[in-house]
Length: 314
View (cartoon, rainbow, N blue to C red):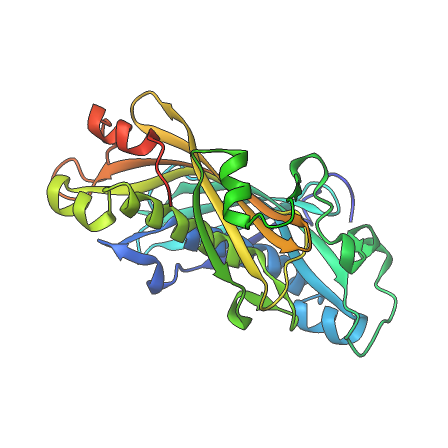
């Protein structure tokens, strides 16, 4: 594997979106586009006979997605045929493009980047040496994500609960806590990237409902449905099965009266430290859900902007 891909490294993968992802009309939501992106990357490893099953059982390694970012320039429909293109840029980072095939032409629906790691599994039965070209991807389990400057752990004083600590950090934070169940995890322990993508989708929905802008209300009263044009999800530290994940969501800016830029941060309390386990950014707007304007961005009026930006408690 080289730092810059040659033509043999590029892989085109035929794909289809999951029917589960079509919740409004026949459009596929951002979460399932990111699932396709992840699946395309895993297929790149499988094509080299280094799929997750072999990595785990033969080498004692877990294939982890630790950083995913995507631009979504067009809508994806449920019956679209999709071609995924995966290009390695460095040993651990890949460029991924998804295109829908329509009338013989490729329509770009995702352009993104994805970073992977091979994490040693303390409970795996084998620990053979991985082929040399994959050695740069190796990380020890405690240092899975190497969060760096994006990670901001919080120290809390005795008697302070996590919610109070997160409100003190930003009074505009909307808070939601969830327990890491087994179906949020893989390799019998760690919360996986796709669980945080699901959490991002859910905390947005909970936030909007709390602000009087529920999905159903906006559909019925205005014919609007939220759309996503940009998203990034990063793992910063391990979270484990059964831990409680405290999630803070805040809208930071409204852009050109058509979109809002928001941030999600996830923490796990360990003693007097709130460990920062994941962070995400999402650029959200609204689009018309029906009629001749279906799919076109809506302009946010004053009442909607005030509801989005006001300071309220979770």
